[in-house]
Structures are given as C-alpha cells and as structure tokens.
Amino acid sequence: KAGKQWRNWVLTSVDFSFPQEFLKKEFSEENVLFWLACEEFKKTQGKKQMREKAKEIYMTFLSNKASSQVNVEGQSRLSETILETPHPLMFQKLQDQIFNLMKYDSYSRFLKSDIFLNHKKSEEQEENSSEAQTAAKRASRTYNT
Image 1: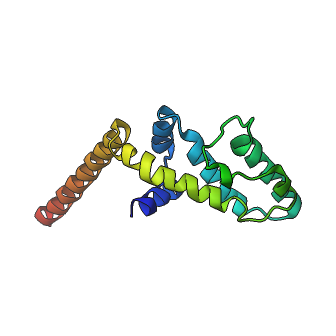
Image 2 (image 1 turned 120 degrees about the horizontal axis):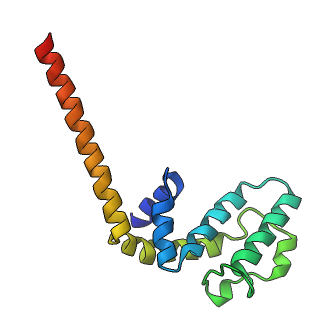
C-alpha cells in the first residue's frame, strides 16, 4: 500500500518539490530522479533516441563516475555494452530496486518529516476553510431567499 501511495504521489503530484526537498535533505534525491528518468525512458521512441537516453541514464546514475550515482546491488549493475541494444525495460530491475528502497525507507521517513507534516497541515487548513466558506454560502442562500 505504501508503495502505491508513493508511486501515485510521485507521478501525480502537482508540486513535487515536497518529496524532492525531503530527499535532497536525506541525500537520496538521485533515487527519485533515477526512477523518474526510467519512467520517461520507457516512453522513448526510436532506437537512436533510446540509445542516447540510455547512455544519459547510465552516465548520470549508474556508471562508476556517475554524477548522481544510485546505490544498487552489484549483480544488478548493467555493463556499458548493453547500451548498444537498448529496450524500454532495460532499467526495470534497477528501477524496481530503487523504488523498493524509496518505498520502505524514504517514504516512511518522509511521512514523519516536518516537510510532509507542515504540507499536510496547510492542506487540511485550506480544506477546512473551503468547507466553512461553502457552508456559509449555503446558509446565506437559505436565509436570503
């Protein structure tokens, strides 16, 4: 359930800055960036574009010299040679590992973080304010008719 909530929030959040801000503080922002890059990669059309994006993902997140290296199990690492024959699901196993890491580690800490709790509190206040305004309008219509 937590994984589905995390995935839905990552994919549908209008303001993704909250989880990303938290992950930045936790020094694990690269995980969600990798996951999102893999989601985009799956939509890539054409072998040339796929090869370019695969290399970009590899160089950014997976190579030993990666600028934002993700922590994946050694046996799951891809060799650079696979980049020559890319396919939409070539990063799936690694993406699943990172997703599970976020789901079981980052997400539970995020739900307890000040960033999330403050965001949730402000949403609840907005919702309560909106409900109060709606009730006031209904009462106004009732008494003014």
